[in-house]
Amino acid sequence: MKLIKSLYINNFFFYALIAILGMFVCAFIFPALYHAVWYIVLILISFLALDILILFFAKKGVEANRITPEKLSNGDENLITISIKNFYTFPISIKIIDEIPFQFQIRNFEIKRALKASSQEEMNYFLRPTARGEYFFGNLNVYVSSPLQMISRRFTFDKDQMVPTYPSYIQLRKYDLIAFSNNLFQYGIKKIRRIGHTMEFEQIKEYVTGDDIRTLNWKATAKKNALMVNQFQDEKSQSVYMVIDKGRVMKMPFNGLSLLDYAINATLVLSNVILKKQDKAGMFAFSKKVENRVFAEKRASQMQKVLENLYNIKTDFFESDYSRLYVDIKKNINQRSLIILYTNFETMEGLHRQLPYLKGIAKNHLLVVVFFNNTELNELIHKKTETIQDVYDKVIAEKFAFEKRLIVNELKKYGIYSVLTQPENLTLDTINKYLEIKARGIL
Image (cartoon, rainbow, N blue to C red; front, side, top):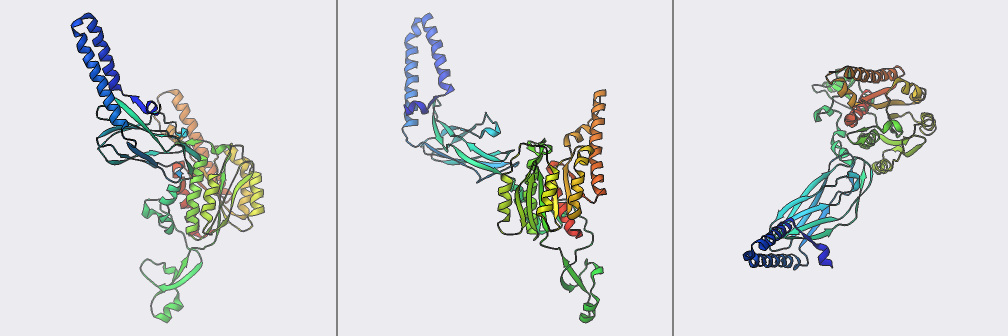
C-alpha cells in the first residue's frame, strides 16, 4: 500500500501505452503484427518492473530539507534553501514541489533538476511576504525518476513548518552601520544640511583644517600658543517616540504592503538608529485607543521590546481618535520629547479635523508628522493625455498633489514639522529628519 502511494506514472509511460494500443489496432487489421505487438508489451512491462525495482529497492533514496530563516522579514525578499542529497548509485531526475504558505497564493511552484549519482545539491528561491503573522509551510515533496523515466517515486519531508513574519529586520541590518555617522550622503543617501551645533561640550582640541573657526577657544590658544577649538557633541538621552496611526487612512496599499506596514518597518529601523545615537526610543500605536506601548528607554532589551510590539500590532482599520491620542500623550509623556507621527492626510479637510489635537501636542513636544505621497497620482500627472477624460483625470490628480503641499505649509504655520514622502523612501526620509533635528539641536 505504501509503495502504491509513493508511485507515480510518468508521461513517457503513457505515451508508450498509447503507442501500443495503436499497434494493437494495427494488429487487428494486419494479423501478422500480432505477435510483435505482444513482444513489445512484454518488453515495456519488463522495463516498468525494472524501473520500480531500482527506485524502490533503496529504502532511503534521497534526503531533502527546507532551510528557512528563523523569521521572515516583511516586505523583503527572503531566501529559502532546499538541500537535497542523492543516495542512489545512478543519476536521477527530480521534481520538487514545495507547499508554500497560502498567503503567497503560489500554486504552480516546482523545481526540476538532474542529480549525479551519490551527490548533494542546494536550490534557492525567494519569498516576499506582505503581512505580519505566522506562515505555515506544508510538505516538501520530491519526485524521483531513474534514467528509464517510466515512473516516479515520491518522498515527503518537513511537514507543517511554521515561520513567523516580523517587521523588516533586513532593513534594520542594512541601516545599522550608518547609524554611527551623521554623513549619510557617504552611503548614497540624501545629504543633511547641518545648521549650527548643539551646546553639549565634549573637549578642547587642536585646530585642524575644516574646523569651525567660530568655536576657537582664545584662552586655551593663548596658553598653548597654538589654535585650539571647542568640540561639541550631539545631545544624548533625549526621548523619541514613534506613534503609528493604525486607522483606516493607513490601509492604502503600495507594492503589496499597506502604509501601516511601511510605517512599522520604518519604526523598527529608526528605533535602532535612535538607540545607536544614545537617545531613548519608545513607540505606541493608536486608532480607537492607544495600544502597543513601549516607554522611551535605552536599555539593551529595548529593541526586542519594540520588535515584539510591532509584530503584535493588529488593526481592523477603524477611524482614528486623535482626541484620545492627545489626552494619552499629555498624561503619560511628561518630559519634552520628539514625537514622530506616522499617518496620512489626503485632503485639507482631513487635516483640519485633527489639527487642534496636533497643535495641542506640539505645544509641549516637538512634533513631526510623516505622511505619504500617492505615487499612482504622480504617474497619472506625468502621463501623456490623449482624450478629454485623460485631461480631467490629470487635473484631479494635480489637485490632490497640490493639497499635499498645502498640508505641509499648513503644518509649518503652527510649528509642526512634516515629512511628505513616498512609501518606498519612508525609512530613509525619517532617518534624515531625525538626524537633521539632532544636528540643529532644536529638541
